[in-house]
Amino acid sequence: MRNYVFSLFFGVYVVIIILFMMKLKKGILIVFEGIDGSGKTTQAEIMLKKLKERGFDAVLFREPSNSYWGKKIKELSKKEFSLSPEEELECFLKDRKFDVENNIKPALKNKKIVLLDRYYFSNIAYQGAKGIDKKKIERLNKKIAIKPDLVIILDIEPETGLKRVSNVRKFERLFEKEDFLKKVRENFLSFKANNIKFVNGSKTIKEIYSEIEDIVFRLIKNREDK
Image 1 (tube, helix red, strand yellow):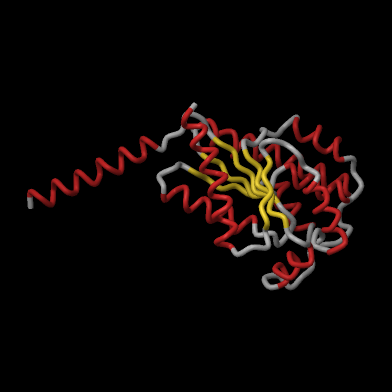
Image 2: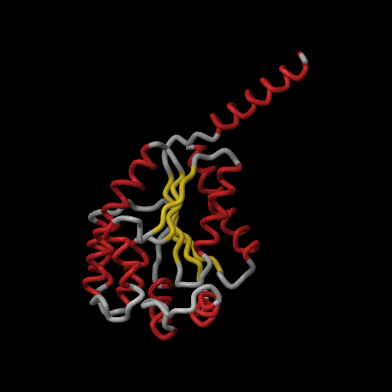
């Protein structure tokens, strides 16, 4: 009985020590981007699970969010020509403002690792492909958005992405036509910054995660060493 109690308390002690060690000095914002069918959502979910298994305090948010504006975007995106590109952008900006203030900022303030499935890079890529000036979209977003520490863009051919999407959804969404997605992909590939990393999304889920894991944990280690 004494050995059992000792083992129990020792196990709890080890868990507490691990959790303490994994507490970051500052929150980290990591964004997953890519065209539809790129596998970004799958990778974000795997990363969330792995981070938690290692004792990190991590959360996953998605855009559009579940705000009034986010729900409106999701509903209207099923209907072609339901919104003009300008109206789409306005809805995304209002939804993002809500997401930043109510989800992202509070989580970062609490020193969490925040994973985000889509962010303003998607606005630049998608609405930019519809004719809105990309610099304008970037300028409007930077007024309300927090700069991410890392942006992972999963790159994949639109044809491959659409085949993946068709396996889980029978209807054709507003943003999922091949010619359009080719323009979107070109916009994603045009992003250049030190915090942006491109990953080949045509590999297996395991291979893609292995590459992303290396990038993410290198960032975390660098943060902990500072």
